Image (cartoon, rainbow, N blue to C red; front, side, top):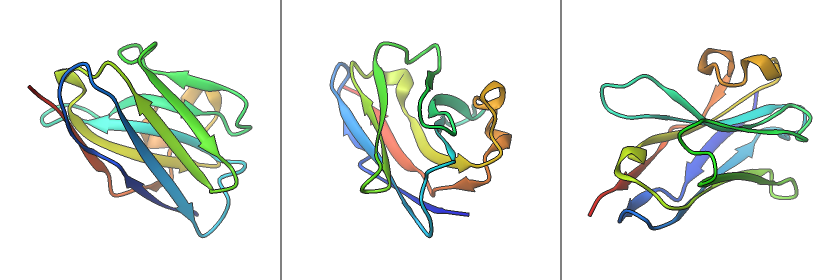
Length: 126
């Protein structure tokens, strides 16, 4: 299994943008479904965005559609999450996750991912 490390979190004001990164080591992300999931205090882990195993399809949670964009740099073995028009309700710890056994119908299910990063905090506040 690959190892994942997130970076780029921080504190921003509402309406601003932030890009977080997920760097993989110990193997290539090729053939893995990769997802960004977040968890706010007292709430369940929520799917934010993800790539299919083929890398050809992207998926988004309803609350971030049109504001967040997932992308990848295969040469750097890194996946990014560009977050625009941030809102206070986007405040959470953001996790990168990967799994070879994640099928498209289960990409939003956090229990399907085998590898997880340590998370990066994103705080949106005025």
